[in-house]
Image (tube, rainbow, N blue to C red; front, side, top):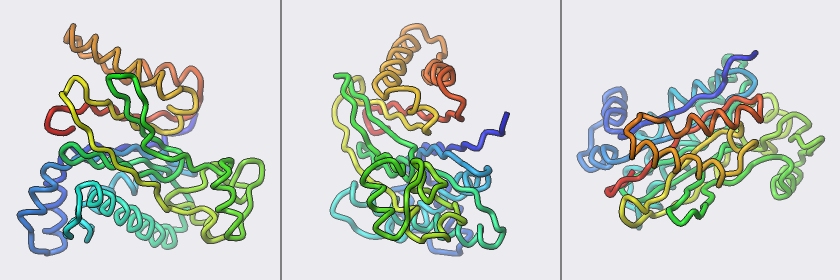
Length: 280
């Protein structure tokens, strides 16, 4: 039995992280930026492989990199553009920092992740690899907020081959099932650009009363490989209805993860977010 290499991040607001980061960097604090991060939530699930070090690094550094982005200080035409710019810069810096750390320590572990940044009624999701996120609304409709990055996906195989890499037995460079990740220094050295940390980013503006707002479910591939998204989301909503009526303290994710564990031996990590009237 191997140690769980998954990690997660849950931050209902990022004000403390912002204040800590500015003090550490000896930077002047901005009231507008502080107000923004006070109303900004961060959720992420991280699927480590080849050891826990990369996943732990992401867990430790993700919030700090989000609040220290230059993008958070710029004016944008919309909230969705602002959140997208923040996540793009944070993930780019995350890969850069971990590459320096991995070169210094000769650590070859890696990780996939999906991260959601939420401000008021806007959700922005970025993923690298095969950690995914979905929204499930009161009309029982699924909206996919991420993109599967695996070597067996045709567009990923074409991308890998376009930079001189190859896919063998469904694995990038004959080694990795996910075609995008943070870390994995050894594979990335073999063919730069074949396995990349470039994220897929999308945004969603949610509207309506609290009862009609969608659920947001983030999970590692240990959740999504054995379960269809609609099956998982229906179970979560049903459990939440029971918990609301009985006040029994039911964890809506417990049944989902238990069912998934019967169908896979992989680690399973998931976060379920229920929106409220004024955001998440």
